[in-house]
Amino acid sequence: MITTKKDFQLFKTEFLKWTEKLGLTDIHFNFVHMDIDECAYVMGDLNQKAYVVTLGKTFIDMEVLPKGFIEYLAYHEAMECVLYELRGLSGNREYNEDNINSAIHTIINRFEKTFKVKNNFTVEVEGQ
Image 1 (cartoon, rainbow, N blue to C red):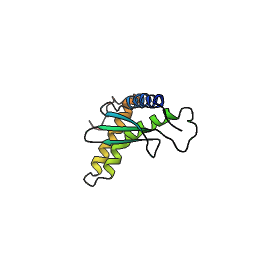
Image 2 (cartoon, one colour; image 1 turned 120 degrees about the vertical axis):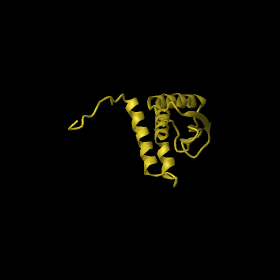
Image 3 (cartoon, rainbow, N blue to C red; image 1 turned 60 degrees about the vertical axis):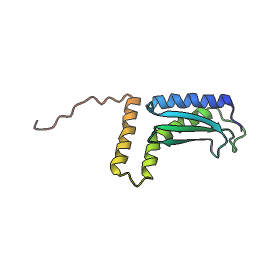
Image 4 (cartoon, rainbow, N blue to C red; image 1 turned 90 degrees about the vertical axis):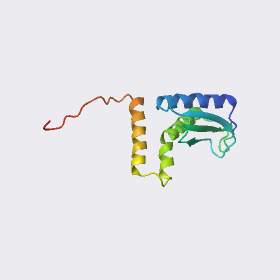
């Protein structure tokens, strides 16, 4: 199965829709449509907050592109971006549990904004 320019445009549109919903507004994305071993993948530079998002031109295991598959790939790669920082931290010996905990809470905060979770409450401490 060969993906078309129209498929690529749909992939970019859907991907950007999901990154907006997921609160990834502080990241720059470059899109590439080329032959790769996978259907799609993301590579990022955590320091530069820049990611390359690639849609494969040829899906070897498919004769026909299933309806909704491009949209699913866009969602999946957007979720990869949400979790990409954890992947980078987990393989770096310079980072410690505090760095990973911070990255986890960044993800939680993004989801709070995405799902409009109200967190404007106060906690009362007994005896005060």
